[in-house]
Image (cartoon, rainbow, N blue to C red; front, top):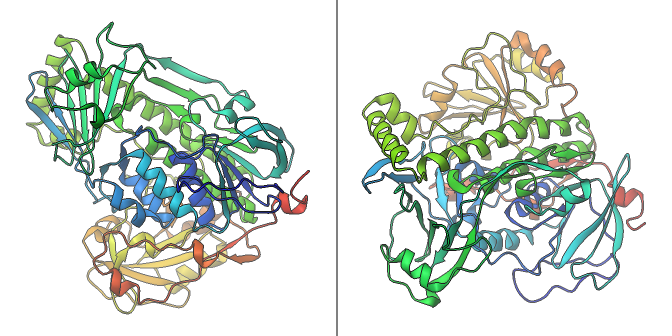
Length: 595
């Protein structure tokens, strides 16, 4: 693009760079999913152009909850530190019955699972602003607003794209990219150009959403009021913000019509008095439960709302989009680098589709149960919930939210071996605090691992580690796990960690004398004994990285995260490890950028 757009002064606008486009990946849509994808790709040294049809990031507080998995993904990109100041480190959701009395408080497992609070309210405009501000640190990411995608042309080794001013007043500029990521929402242009239908159902219920200021609520948890006469959701936020959601009765409003202030005030009356200037946003909407027929079409991919839409009752819409980005972006980086083959990209659909479908179904079920308008169903719900809370298994099931879909990946870039009971393969690696380095610094496990694959092992010999190295397993960082309160001592070619909070011992107590192979997205790809090394290596052969020319990620792309670590000051004294990725020239280099 020889005549780049001049960035306006509004800090929510992105920057643009002079000269022809030299980019590997075009990301379409600068919502949370697109911004996260750009961060993940940029942190791996992939060159990205991010285009957004709107002139700025969103002013609408749509999504309102980040979970621990999303925060871990942001940690991997080095930006969780920047996001924490705009979230409420939350304590889950409290559910109330038809009579207004508390039923249960669903807290999940807190930060015991992935190292971050389980459920965290936030305002979407704040999140998008922070993600965009941090994106300016990425030297290989360019962002352009008021720019939209017009054309896609498929070729064997690239995609020809045409982008231009969103209002259509100006030339469409054509160039080649290796991949296109459609992160452009429910009305996705990428999905439309690919002619990919979405299937599912839409619901007739109309909900009013009001985001308010100056609110007196001080709870750090969401509240679901299951009164069948008027199901209601209240989610307090930071600095006096609060989200209210009300099911409207017939005749009170139509989807898309701005609700009158008098209706908003009447609905809020049981909770607070409000003035017009304290209503930040009020909309009426219906919700959908839809999934795209396919998430990959040759070199194009759908992520976030472009791929799936779901009711809000499980709080997983935005988080599902972040999961899409976490699953896909490392795979694209590995394929671009020559370290993996195209078959790895096929696993995006096979790995993400089952979980997206399950989350959609859960969201629908929760809406029908928690937000029911049937008094009889509400009374049965309350009776069963209160009875379950009087049993240990029922209490764990409800308060730890064990009704959420299993995130285990059963097919794709994983190797579930026969005969393994309660195997963690296909599940996220826990993130405990660990002791690391000669100074026994306390740090998060992820900050010990590399951005690539990792191989951890407990109770293994030097000969076992040498055999793993000869087999060509895709592991960049090799980690000795030390249990039983012993000192971690580094060895040539591998580092060593020990337990700092009890959770490393708990996670590896059943994995003694075994290797644990971890993917770049922190998913456990295989658990195996030394005599199974060759079998695992052969199973991953078509996915495994291959050696290639190393390219050092610029220092500006390295954002080590030290969330919640009271020893961060001591940790910073540790010398930084060099982060390297390998890559092949993008099609925009080999073809001269513009066509």
